[in-house]
Length: 411
Image (cartoon, rainbow, N blue to C red; front, side):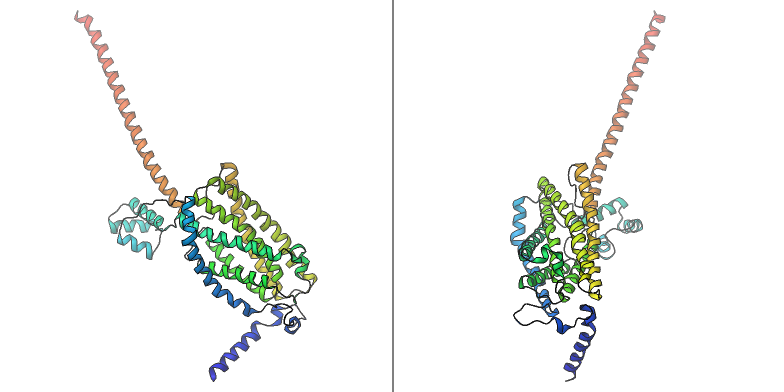
């Protein structure tokens, strides 16, 4: 009897603390004021988002099936090839250090490991480089991940655009706030919200096993901010402006993933063309449309319809976090555009998987270095042989002159 009572008290305490009207509703508006009759539409409730958790696990299962039955055969059809890497020799002490201490040992660690294993520092460094390359994801794995995200973003953008094409707030952003907060939500917009939140939750769950990229921290922040943004905007009935935020993001993401797919397949021209289209669309939607229309309407236009409250500040703070990430990624994209314009092609993804490019370059430089050193040694030997030959010729000529000079005297 005590357990249900304590649970009831805890629930009442949470409701009293978390669901205070001052957090979620404009001043002067109460929960009773936004209730609508059954059949007039859906008013967003926090319990509606409980479906996002099983949806996230469903997305993970679908992704597993999709990558193996569709993406993997498709990668072979497009000609995706995995680089053959040199496997590191089996050295238990180095393997233990690699797994328990660090993948990139310091100079002092290299010296100590060299003494323990009886190997030179260069061989220790080469072993760790080969060992890191062993753990790098293959092009096939990266292709499968990109193809899964491409399919979702394309479907989400198409479905989102179809559900919003006849919505008045898509064309007039003042309609986002007319009648707020008593705004019924259509079923299509509700499922648009739930599916997007479930997908980003699945990405956050899989972030530790996915390909780790240079912007790993920014990606985690993006996923968390997106989940908070979707969840809070639904509970606070910012659904209208929330659908615009999701549509803007989905509009360019599928182009980026398709460019990655063709990059891994080696279709350079197709990849470069898609990347240029993506870059233009990203810069327009994320640096012009998003701050100029969406953020502006939440920061400025909304104050014409209600006084700012906690939800107003929290929602706009999340939007500004997303905008800061947009600026960061725009910087990376502009760097790639610079390479495309001045170098003739996009040499590599600025958000490429961590350490992979460095290791490849080191390995190539190592091979080039060995070739260059051999060429240098060969050149040195040739120069010495030439010098020796010249000296021999000079000696012969000198001896010949000396002999000729002595012949008249002998006569």
